[in-house]
Image (cartoon, rainbow, N blue to C red; front, side, top):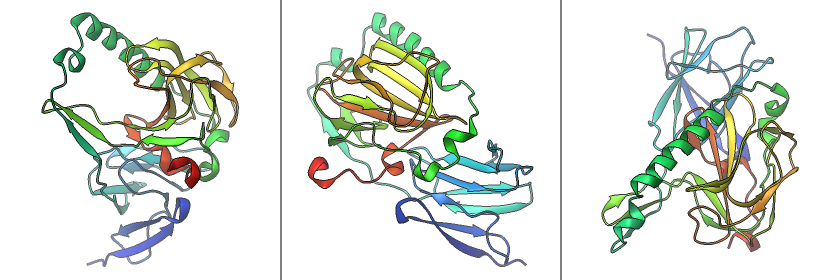
Amino acid sequence: MNTAATALVLGLSGSWIAAAQDGADGPCVGLSGNSVEGGLIWGRVDPDSTVTLDGEVLDLLPDGQFVAGFHRDAQAVSELVVNGTCRQKVDVQQRDYRVSRIEGVPQRTVTPSEEHLNRIRRERQLVSKAKATRIENPNWLMQIDAAFEWPVMGRISGVYGSQRIYNGTPGSPHYGIDIAVPTGTPVYAPAAGQVTLAQTDLFYSGGTIIIDHGYALSSSFLHLSALDVTVGDVVNKGDLIGRVGASGRATGPHLDWRMSWRNRRVDPQLLVEDMPTQISD
């Protein structure tokens, strides 16, 4: 019987990933990143390899690099398989999320009208289509551990995974990081990519931009007051893309930055340096 070997691989911002393998020769592949709910991991194999995570085939960049993500409520253990034979267990750290209960909210503000529901359905189709766009530009993700910067600097007013319960009914979890800054504050591309959605007035998110960073990894920017890009534009890290606002269902000016890998919502805050203390406090 094979003995289980455990490898610790240094990841983003000094985090460590524990990877257990059914073999004595170490893990199938070294992993970096954040093996946590809402986190991204990445590694590199021979470009001719096949890699799956929990049975899902992963995209490989020309150099053999791959990226994978975990949703807010990911299972505690995932399995990475290389070439169908080397199996590697990946422990996914579970997180505690902020949950607040609000009672006495008028039901009309909790449940949209049928007219609004129809609009919401149409807009969700637009967003889904934008995120389903297949763009494979390896230059954008070749250095993923240094690819992302804050799109705007300011006070963090909302975090990934938090949830509100209105009148006993759970609302959808918040999948982004909120940064409270004045209306009109410039928003910059946190990494290179191509614009796949640019809408000025969506029901929930108002002015909205989606940038595809390649290989099914995308960023969304919500509640904008102005858009400085259009669909098809290619942007580099640091390019101006829009302006902060309070459009859509927002109670005040802020940027809601979200990220997705395939159909999983991941936490942008895990891909950037800490916000300076004097700003985030």
